[in-house]
Length: 411
Image 1 (cartoon, helix red, strand yellow):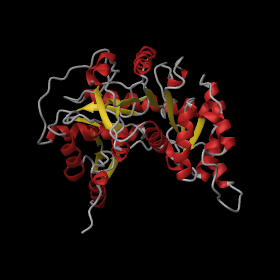
Image 2 (cartoon, rainbow, N blue to C red):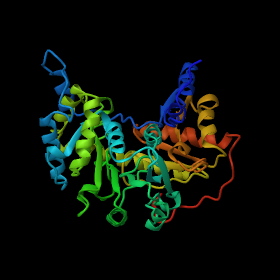
Image 3 (cartoon, rainbow, N blue to C red):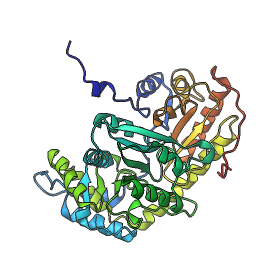
Image 4 (cartoon, rainbow, N blue to C red):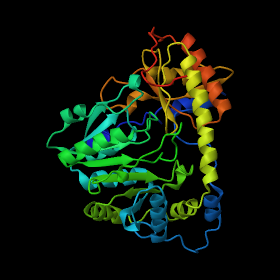
């Protein structure tokens, strides 16, 4: 029998999707599954984007420029300029989702065997992107006790070798919802300049910040133009996950020219997705005000409910729409599967993402889950009841000394 490649075998399973067969079986048994495992918002896509798709007039859905439609890139440049990010359309490469933007960036700045430092827990698919490119992850662990704030820069220094080429962050964070401060970004700036590294920042949740906090882009940091790369996407901003349109933004001309060669090899980003994305730039500010208000309510309901459950610890996120909760269980992977196979409350159960898959360091996160609060508050309240009831009877429950994370408002 022909053999599968080593590269294919080392690709990790998605902790977000690997439990899908168990969820499907639960539904076949007649149970309602509340999906907290994936960041697919139930928020309506802006009307301007939907109308643009419906009114698409050309007789042929043709290729676009490999870098993306010029008019769309010009519109994006104006969007960034309003945020204080001073770029023009030549600094932007449109990609097939933020995933492709990150993969093109990694392939443009790193060779097989090179190393990237990433604060963990991090978006699980980073593991897949890096494994496919043969890049080595050097994780630096942030703690639930600190609310997943940036670890000390001295810890980054310990990991830097001649093979280190970049630091990768997600801001606000998936899976933690943590929003980096100006001081934390300045610390990263110092180490990036000191060691001449790239600072790659996944900023797809930029619009979603709460409690009066402001998002700061790496492209706003002074004296770092040649070292910074912004990864972006329409998926979450406009609740258009299926459009598959993302962006790579940088002022490093050599990097852009290199990435464009990868872009040419895949021909072009999705034409229809770009039509929707360009139209979405005209989304009124009221849309975001309403969406943010909705996410704040969902967050508050979820975090308050979780922290009332015996043994559960969950810091209050200040961005995105995810949280990491620590549970009084022996193994969150087993618990998540057990929920789908053996437990229900009022014929309902929940699907969560075991958090161990969001870490690179073995065994860390074994008692944690990631929850995406992308559903309405009624579903979230039911989910809390399911979790509370499940933990009362789960055979693998362990005793814990519940402690409130330092400096984190958990209600």
